[in-house]
Length: 368
Image 1 (cartoon, rainbow, N blue to C red):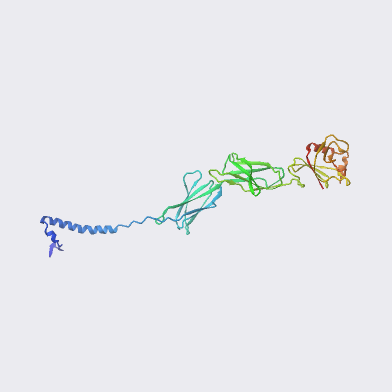
Image 2 (cartoon, rainbow, N blue to C red):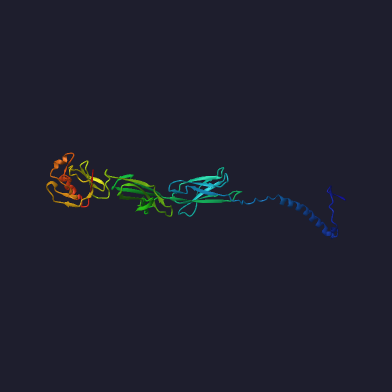
């Protein structure tokens, strides 16, 4: 069946048989509703198909590591932080939390290279925790890593490299960053280990001086240490090596406060204090038939009132062998001077100088 409408031929829409049974007034309304449904449903389907599909959230977490070389440094020395992410071209952010701080402070950023790693150079002055962050992207989830770098104070010990025995020695210690009032310990190397030897308190300038006498001859190693505190690990100076030398060619012991050495080959008497030669006197020694004895002795008696061949004073050290004055001073101008009965003769002026300085017990050493 064809119908003409506004000069246009349209195909008639067949009406279901069930609609013919409806009352005539409702039929036009149902036809209009059916036409609207035909137009709306396809449009809705097309709109639903055109909606974009949302991208899935990144779920993979990359492996990020952070290392420090070295992991412990002296204040003011650098450490290299190496971050390994395994993703080339990624942006990493470095931050730090120093001892005493409660939050991380941003420091620097870096882009990973072709091997997925990046490095940072830092110079901490206190113990510090470093953190490196990767913010993530469309493929990777955010991740971070941390590393702690222990920082020791810089302890500097200065002093002489060599001294003669029984001289006063001064070691100076300086600690940086400053630690006024802190205790430092001077250690000496003994039996393959370090032993505490002196304790000092740092002054307001974070310095201290340790003074002592070199009572023994030899080679000694020292170092200064400081305990850890809230911001630093324990610290120690480099070792300082001290060579204590004999103050005389005869290697006289350093401990005795008074010492007499008689050199028979030189016809000289040496008076020493703690190994140091104080005075040297010409002397007359025993004749060939009555030689002055060799060896180690000590003064056992002193005679303050003498005269004649003994001069004004006498000090006995081995039987009747003694050190005394003389009534033949001209013999002291000769060489060799082997004229006595075995005693050691000095000028009267010299025995008067020596006598009060040598108490009973003073060692006497007669060498060839």
